[in-house]
Image (cartoon, rainbow, N blue to C red; front, side, top):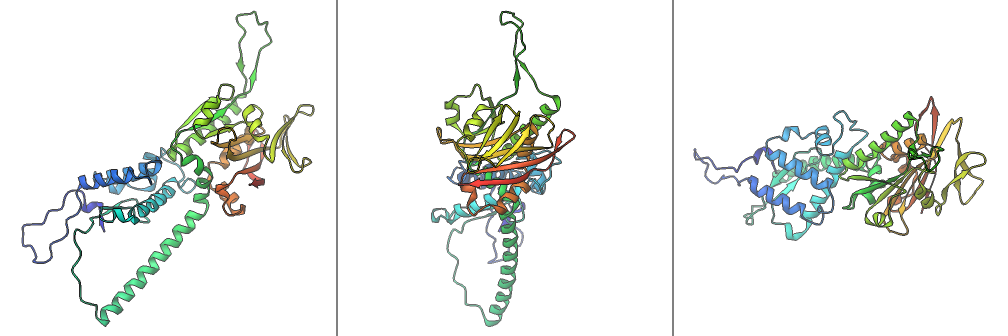
Length: 400
């Protein structure tokens, strides 16, 4: 296996004292590597994704440019996935999970017999520096069978190699199967589509009591400045997570969105009673949104047991609740994600839950096998203090 340091330029056999019978196989040159890269990226395994090709192209091209020493997790997170330079790589393993998927897809690509004679591009486990191997042009000459001593030596080497591979593979499997992958498994129906994502949202509105005939009459947006910051931060977190995974996020107000827009791509419904589309979407699910106008209480209600509900009064809040859902929208067939906090702080907690791997890992640990490919609802609770929200906690869930 050749590393990038061997492939910066075409290898030339030295004219000085060549050893007879030991001429090395030439390493692949840059042009050959780049042609093979484009062939791989145009395959079915890569052409419908953005983040997998982005990572593979970046590591190959930068290695060819002599920057293989810079191919570290944080550097890739910042340059490829647009993360903040000081982001927490343990809480946001986008580079590791993407690299793992790239390795799988490369293995699948080369397992096709039609690609057996092509130059091989690999991404070794535990490294972000790609390797290259020229396909053999002819069959190797038969070699004599090994002696008993060679068999014993080979057996020991194989045993050590197998142990190393088993240990490394187990570590990778544990990481992939744990919290680092649970968040991606939730978002996979959205991330694995070629389209951008639409966020449909609404804001609280108030209309000044002025005669309509007055030209100065206008609609004014009303929101507490702290709540504005909470809502804005939540939107930024979602945009950052999707952007890190190769998806762009666009916005539309619920009052303006059309069914044609919802048919075109996956979408997120954000907000609860200030977004009529959210209330409508949840109305057919087990856990739905209800506003008790007499008591001025916002509720998430269990349809199977209406006496079971979670309340968020509009005053003197000590707790807030949120509803998360992921299911196909019946009229459009597109994947729909609902992020509905009864209050804005509940919405902030729900956003944190959907962008921080450790919270989704907790859900995955208690969810039944195959949850990632099924529809689901999650009810969350968060403690409130001094106008801020605490850690999101899972109250209950429904998977169907």
